[in-house]
Length: 410
Image (tube, rainbow, N blue to C red; front, side, top):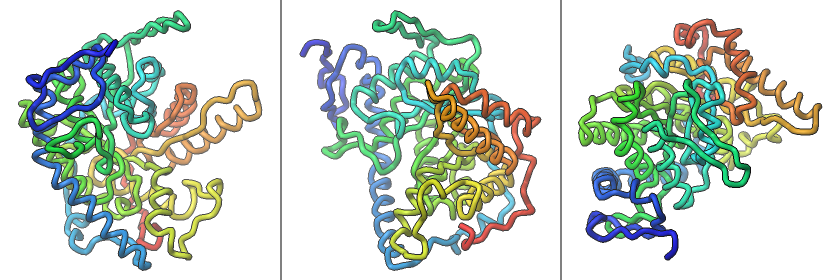
């Protein structure tokens, strides 16, 4: 096939089969050692992941009968205990504005250069999970870690290069519910999350550490502390395999499902050697709210425009996240501002910026340590708000002990 390379059976572990096209350059990512590591992760944790997904299904059956989520009685000792996370690296202390985006090469460079504190390169929601997108994204991350990320656009003739000072990189692998159908282990598709994570950390951990940063991640779509503990065990397994000190890998967990909102302390505790914060994943949280209890008439939501973060259950969720994180020494990150600049419409453009400014003012005032934006053009606006209201690198000192958030509030 033109434009492809051949990887022989001797270059793929016996237990792993690849069915995606193998184009020029893919051999950098899909090495025998890297694929062996992915197969090792799947062998060690694949059955446990599938069992946890079955727990989700069974739990939904009880919710469909009208039962509502609640704080767990069996983990009360964790919520009431006096403990903190292991710690946060220097380059993740100030996260006042984070930008998210796909793992497209040009867009990555623009995100790194836009002035944000952190760039989350997204193998999940921001990137269509085609085989080419996933492998090209890995190539782009490898080039970043080696100081070789650049792009010459053949259509426009423009050249894109990294600035001397850029955002800190965090990578979001796909969630536990997803599989990579182009890679099978003993006949079954491998976990997409372990595929993304495994290839990225295997190829880049040492280079990132040598550059004064580290392998940092965002973890999506989790629902329970057991799912968080699975990631923690994957991290510890990878650290041992790669000869890294325990706690080298750092992650922020998106609280974007209704069940997870009732287990924030537990999720922090399950990942306490590796976690540095939680994030309000607002849009998926609203979806999860509808999916989990939307069949109950008392919990039908109004029009989307009326479901805002400053009111009702979303405000309670945001405040509980701040209180929980700060008590444990972790960052409490605000949610995504989905607005982008509007060309050729001054009124609409002003309205978009005003919405971002108001949203970030609320977050910083509540006590969040940083926020998300979706477009480089919104970075400065969000930064100005947090610069004005947050004088230090974060607000972890604001414990919000004045708050009492109940099950009914959520």
